[in-house]
Length: 260
Ligand SMILES: [Zn+2]
Image (cartoon, rainbow, N blue to C red; front, side, top):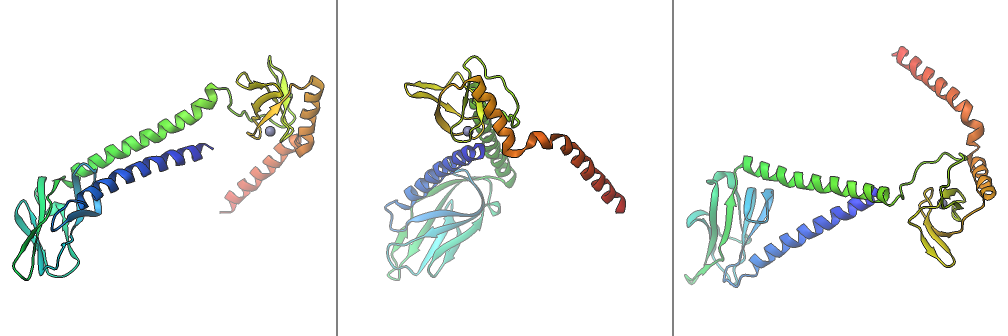
C-alpha cells in the first residue's frame, strides 16, 4: 500500500519531467529554419534549463539536399559531416566551461548556405554537474521521504493504523463498541472516523483493510469472534510450544556454527 503510493508519486514526477523535457526538445526542433538543429544527450547530465555536461549529439536535419553540414561552437568550427545523418557527437569537457552558442550550416551543391537555429547552452564542469545532480537527487530523496511520512502519518492521524492484534486476544473495543468484519470475520474496535449511514456504519477493518458496513456487535458476539479467530490457526494451543521450537532452531543454528 505504502510502496504503491510512492510508486504512483514517482511515476507522476517522472511523467511530468518527461513532458517538460520533450516539450523543450519539441520546441527547439520546431524552429522554422532551413536547417533545424537539435541537441541530444548520450550520457551526462542536462538540467533542462540549458546546463549540460557530458557526451552529446548535435543533429542537423536540412530541409533540402546538402553536400555537407558544418557545426560551430561560438562561430568556431567543431566539425563537419558530409553524409546523412548529419550528426556530430561532442564532449562538453573538451570545450571551455560557460555559456556557448551551438549552430550549424548546410552547404548545397549549388553553393547555397542553409543556416540553423541557435542552441544556447551552458557547459558545466564535471564537478559542477555532479553537484547539481546531487542537488536533484537530494530533492528527489526529500520528496520520497516526505511521501513516505505523509502516507504513514495520515492513517496515524485518522486513527486507521492497523495494529497487529494477535488472533484470539481479548481487546478493548472503546466507547463506540466493537464490530465484526463481514469479510474476514475478525472483531475490531469501531473508530471515531467511520461514516454513519442509515443502514449501518462504514468502517475499515484493521485486519483485512477492507471497507464494509458494520453494526455494533454484542460483547458475547465479539468474544465468540475472538474465540473463532483462535480456531482459525490454533495459535492459542501452539503458543507454549512455539518457544520450544525456537530454542530447538537456535540450538540447530549454534551447532551449525560449531561445524564450520
Ligand atoms: Zn476484515
